[in-house]
Amino acid sequence: MTTSLSSILFKGIAARSFTAPLTRSCYHGMRYFATVSNDPDTHDDFKPANKLENSNISLADVIEQDVKDNPVMIYMKGVPDFPLCGFSSLAVRVLQQYDVPLSARNILEDPELKNAVKAFSNWPTFPQVFIKGEFIGGSDIVLNMHQTGDLKEKLKDITSKQ
Image (cartoon, rainbow, N blue to C red):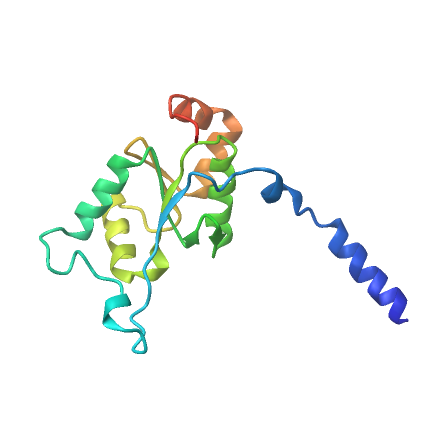
């Protein structure tokens, strides 16, 4: 019984496709932003500094700058290397098909950022994809645009990743 159980387990693992992320450099060139929690055991010199805290820059300004500076910007749950939501994962996988630079922010790290993005786009759900400064929508819209060819047209003049 042990042999048959391990054989079944091995066949199940072998049947899964692990080749796509390994054979393609789909994460090369991506830029995403993350913060580190304020761990009380971390020395002050190594704690992340909040640059917005003592500046006149608002989260709306940060979002506007993100959308302006990045040809493809996604506000998502998790990061492109490790999405924490199926919808975010779907949006990233669709966008990766076009080999364009992808920038992202993890909205789960900062509830204020999450609310600011919702207010900026006037859209309640995540992920939120912006292409060339224009709000596109979530994963369902990105997938639909991919299937109809509209996404290819939208991304055609964005330079490929180096």
